[in-house]
Length: 180
Image (cartoon, rainbow, N blue to C red; front, side):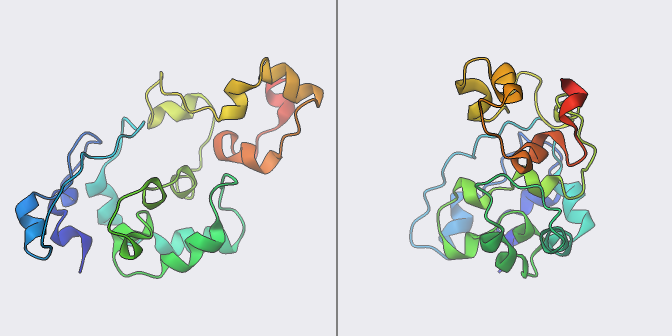
């Protein structure tokens, strides 16, 4: 079954605020009961499902990025879990992975920032963040906000930072001395 069979509004959706969940009657065609949850919240302000669907299946691009080790992932993005789930023929499942294994929508089934960064490679934090996110969105990871005086602490060596995790927000070509 193709995702658009139930989530038909995605084909024309150009706004993040669009509710793409099907009406309960659509679910009842196949399921005994239909409890439609509220749409998941997001910190995005710009996204067009219609535009991305016109591009077709982006799974080969995500696969190539993982295979060539240029997929900018955070430590929680397990590529050993992601990679096998990119062989679908439904373009939606390239970014919405694992849905065939669960009836529940969870954060793991929602696109990750690393997915977006395979194609959207111009990273100049924080300025490029605002292309898709609200300027007041809290995007900084916990270590940036929970460690007192994080900027001073990480540049002094008191906080051990894995530079690969910095890539997700700051890009692969960032240099520490660019800010410090």
